[in-house]
Length: 302
Image (cartoon, rainbow, N blue to C red):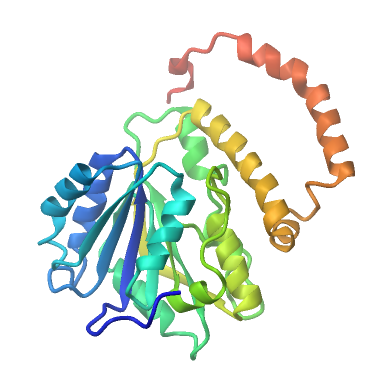
């Protein structure tokens, strides 16, 4: 665990893991530079380049350092996956609030201030602030684009979420592309968890741990809005589902209480595995037939 924040430390540390998307990262940093107080160093930004090198880090540093008030750090890291990168960023943050972003988001005005307000709204309790993400519109969208952007295929919509008796969101609506937490609360609980290869659930697992072990409240930071510049193909969604399955299996071993709460069942149990094998055998024929059928993407356009 790090010592207390140094003198003149910012209250917000913006943490961005990045891998192989320099143009999108640049647009994200440019939108951060348009946040109030950016040029005055009102918050710090730390980028972790997964598999990056020192030359790449220096290029990004030179391009954005001044616009972010001299409070930009770019760390080149060995290729390890975004969860170890995000874990490292939490370890080096100097702020009391950590705002987790993806490198493919563009911040709307007022995101930093909205997260600050969220952390001051809970009468001293730890806070997990869930920001909002809107999909970047697609020119001439396909039917699949509409499915991704208007259904819960990728993300659940907080606007449609059930609330508890206090009107609060569940930890299930906390996503690492726009979510903030108290840095010291995270460090006391052991930081970001998850195996290096994993994709997904690190954000909801962290939110669940803060709620159940640190008495944190989930605050709906509805005014903290980012635009998610990520267009999914059917193949990318299938790959994502595969990676989520691997991650779910790993978390069920590492954080069984979280996995049981999230999935509503023990996915590693013998009964669950038997059910899954039977399901795959039953559905294999249809899957193989669909995989071999020709598909013209123009048929799915509006």
